[in-house]
Structure formats: structure tokens, C-alpha cells
Length: 368
Image 1 (cartoon, rainbow, N blue to C red):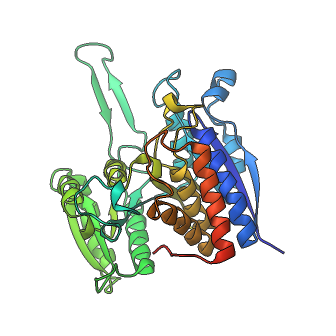
Image 2 (image 1 turned 30 degrees about the horizontal axis):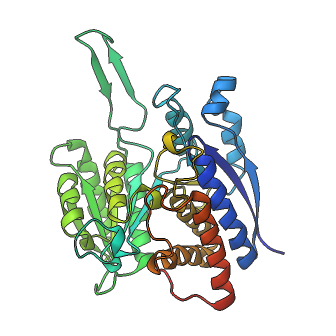
Image 3 (image 1 turned 90 degrees about the vertical axis):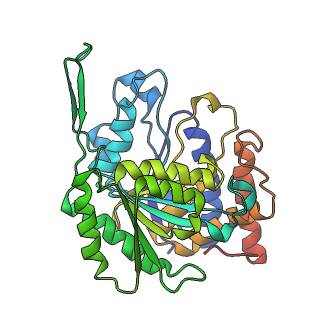
């Protein structure tokens, strides 16, 4: 009997419906090839649901998600609604209430034409960021006094715990051990990115990183302050392998990383609690101006679905899905990632058809 996975499908707002629909089209093909099944449950939460009901995402929805294996998420945010209201209730809601402490963001170049840097080739940019996903300035501790006056004060706390810091750092070392060394390197490497010289609370990260590193003698370590890391990402992205960083800095530097590999339309992420239900999404926003135009790239969501498959234990399917996307780009069948140059539905069909073709004829290439 084939395995059956319960998947929540939450398209959200803007381009979410379109990119998720294409990812599910590809998932149909992956299931056909690899012999597992999914039970998919549509979840309506987002702007339209809120405008009709006044409800963001109820506790019952989180209870239902806890009974699932994973959630495939589109995007959230709508100009008709106060900025941050839906984002904090739905995205942050899942991250906090489901304790999705690993934000996994691969930054991998598939073709040199997608990189704005001179002379950088696919082998030069292959990085995985482990962003802590539940603490820092995003923990929700904030407030105002004298609001609306010229003397207004706004505060938002950066919060770090030993438990939260250690578990994401340990995850980064375990991931580096699993990935193995990059070509030409003797050891895998984990780089800590922080700003402990100025944000003194992040000394907790410095000390915890050093302690955990001693347990992994086969893994090289490095350190960069966030401003220097951004600089080196542009100058020498090949220096980086696995990186671990705080919630706020991870949010920023992975957008920079996305631009090195072709833009937000190909940047995937997983919001993960190892061994438990987790959520997977492209890191792009809802892009309301592209809603309903069939112009948005679904590749970020499709690759996020690949991360979901790996989380579910379908590692072979995950690798094949990535290899399929990579080959379409490397052979220039996908010519560009600029919105509108390929239709959203066209890209979904291309990935689905090529994956089925590879299954019949054997893969031409394989992803690292």
C-alpha cells in the first residue's frame, strides 16, 4: 500500500492561488512517478476570508493543521487590509503556534545567466541558510507610548533564548554533516552570521555556536557580522556553505541571496519543525499587481514543494523535482525568470511534462 500524506493547501492572497495551483499540478506528476498519495485539504484563510468573516485564522485551523503532515502555502497580504495584520496572524501564527523554528532557505544558482554577478557559475553559489524562525524582533513583543504625538516612542524587543539559539545552530551543523563538503573542500562548513559586536545580546549566539561546534569536529566553522556577510555575499558567494543566523538578519540576507540566483520567483523556503507538521512557501510576497494575470513564476512554490517532499521522507522525489527544474533552466527551455516572459501556467506544465519525460527516459542530470 502506498504512503498517504495529509497536506493543507493554503493559497492565501494575490498570486498565491496561481502559484499553488501549478505546484499541485506538478505534485500530481510526482505522485504518479514515485507511488505515494496526498490527501489535500483546502484552507481559505487570507484577505477574502477576512473581509467576509472578520476572521484571520482561528485556533481550530491550527488544531487541524497539527493533524496533518505539511502545509503548502502561497502568499499573504492585501492592500485593502492593514499592513501586517494577516501576515502576523497567519504566517507568524503558524511559525509560533506550530513551533516552526527552522526557516530553511536554499540559495542555489542553476545557470549563470540568472546571476547579476560577473563570472559566477552554478558551482559558485550553493548555500543553505538556517534562519531562526520564532524569536528575535519577530517574537511579537512591541508597543507604543504617546502614539500620534511628536514625542511618540515605539519599541520592539529582540528576544533570544538559549534553547531557541542552540536548536537552530545544532540543526545547521546536522544539515552540514548531511550535505557533506562542497566540491573542492575537505569539510562542510557552517558560518555564523550575527552582529554581536553591536547587538550585545547576540553574544549568546557567539557562545552557543562555539559550544555546539565542539561536538562536530568534522565540520569547519566561520563567522561574519551581518554587514560584512552581505558584502562577501556579493564579492565571494562561493565562500559560503551552510549559514546560521537570527530571524531578522536571515530575513534580509536571504532576499539578497535570492537576487543572486534569479530573483524572488525561484527562491523557496521551508518553515520546519523536524519530525512534525511543517509549512512550505516561496519567499516572495503576494504581488497583488500580478494577481490573475498568469505572469507570476511558480518555480519558488514548486521548489518549496520539493523541500516539503524531503521533509516527508520522499528524498528521491525531492531530488528529482529539483533536478527537473534545474535541467529546464540549464537547457534554456526556461529562458528567463522575469514575470510575464513565461506564463505561470506554462511553467507549471513544463515542469510537470519534463518530470514525466525524465521518468520515462532516465534523468539527464542530478541535483547536488
